[in-house]
Image (cartoon, rainbow, N blue to C red; front, top):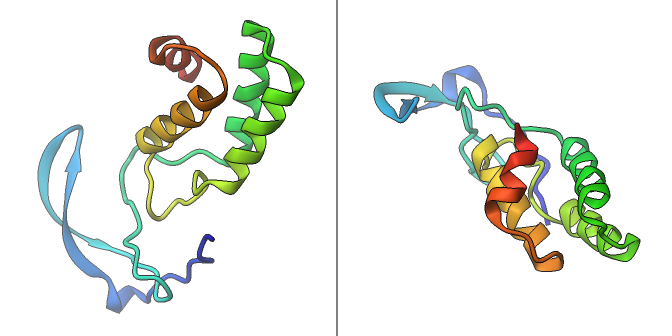
Length: 118
């Protein structure tokens, strides 16, 4: 079950290390959820909305002749996952989670699925 995140105030932010383009860039103030304690990702790699991934499912379905039942199961799994959690995930983590969910129902390679993110 996902938390409905409540951000801390600006004076309560915590100073943590951050990376930009794979390199350490020092410390930066991070917001966290006061309910569950998850630190919000401040990555420049912004998260995508769940609708983006649902649309990708339909594009994949047309490209690889996926049955409607498989597409429905994937959509249900996506909506039940933490894919839309902007606090705990960045875009690359979302893409990996999306690929894992797709591969549960469709036998496709990682590379063929990564092409849809372009």
